Length: 233
Ligand SMILES: [Zn+2]
Image 1: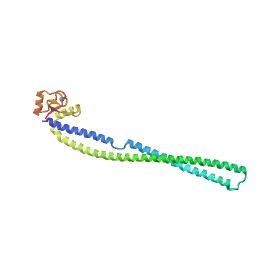
Image 2: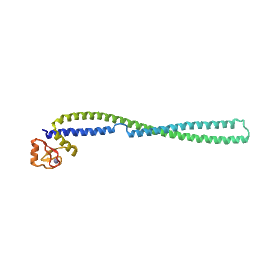
Image 3: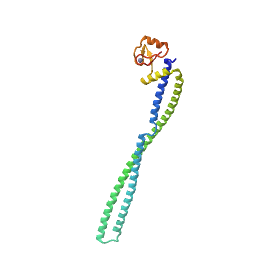
Image 4: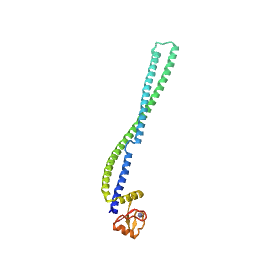
């Protein structure tokens, strides 16, 4: 005959199973790619692209400065070389030289501006890469811990399922149906302990006759109010 302690033992196993399965679902949900990491990786890729473009512009700017300098040197050579004596030509050359020198100065400013921009972009990229590396290290550590917890939970669940199979023969079919029904109704709490004559499930004071019946240990006795299976210790 099924006794209240038999049903309680089954309930304890089922509650442990519920907890382990809920935690496993939680652990599995946390496993895999992190959206935060994906977003940071994308940010880093964008910064790298920006830096590549800046370096390419720097390359063009360097070429452009050299070009203007070369032209200025050429004009300077003509102007002071002594081969040209015509005042009109000399005045024109002088004007060309001034204009080229202004161009060199302007292009050098652009070049310096780019150097500053590149330095800033490199610093920003460096700090983002460091941040990404740190986050990736934490993520890898967390994933390893989750993987460890997952296999531990799977072992625990397998053990509990074995225990449940061993406990089932002690609970007859009608008692099992009653237990399942009450378990669903009372969020896993089908069995209630009795303390000082009170059902610990719903806190009602139980009639003496019911208490005596429960104490006798013959068959399952249910609370008159919440209908849980009563266990008198
Ligand atoms: Zn009750």
